[in-house]
Length: 326
Image 1: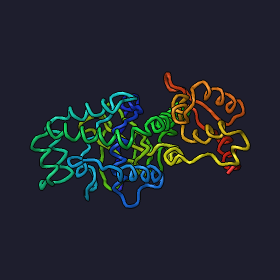
Image 2 (image 1 turned 30 degrees about the horizontal axis):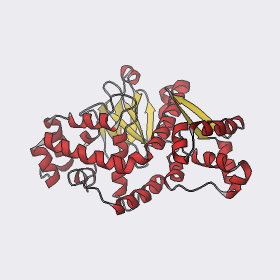
Image 3 (image 1 turned 90 degrees about the vertical axis):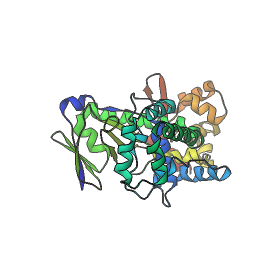
């Protein structure tokens, strides 16, 4: 089956990318609940389960909503970001602004008329319930996502830069052709392979949301409480495993380029800024910058600018050197 999204010329002009800490938080919780999480996030899942073993989270109001036997979950829990880069506070403020009518309608769409206890409590007191859910999601974010957020954000921004270049060079045809294997773009219609047959209009444009900690499939939220949102697995997320597991560079790579440069080259298999690298490696930004200059001059590291932020990552040649050293 397939979901068709009609996108007019005006809608296409309003289509944009965004990054959402809340999307990572909810997606991460759903991956934690799976007996077989997506291969691309297994490193993070192992780390998160170890973290929770040291002290569990209290998610009594949130967990039954985002993890259940239903094919979907209440999409008002993840409003589309209003801007390209949002904070967790921005996301949760938007969540708390969901109207009572939207809350109740969404709960019934997911759970039917016989609401489970957590959904019934939220439907009976939407404002108080949303405040509690927001508090729980903030706690989950701070414990499970925030420790890795600099790297996750850099990976998401690198994905967006890659997609923007495709849009510039080949238009919507090239963008959607490479975005995910389950997408097809033709004659103003975006077709998404899914478990339902439906149609929707991307009024005002699509919000394209790369997700690091989510599944390997595309998820569409139709225009209900906010814009129509298309969440897709971001490019390059598998490299985050080297950051989450904190595995050191191999002895072979150390012998080739020296310990400091080897550590940087290994760390940059997941994108990062100079400041992020200095914090992770326990050194100064100036020392990191000096080593990065040498690695860049030799084609082992590349960089991209995102506003005021400069994000570095290991190049194909750099990864080949790491593989050879291993």
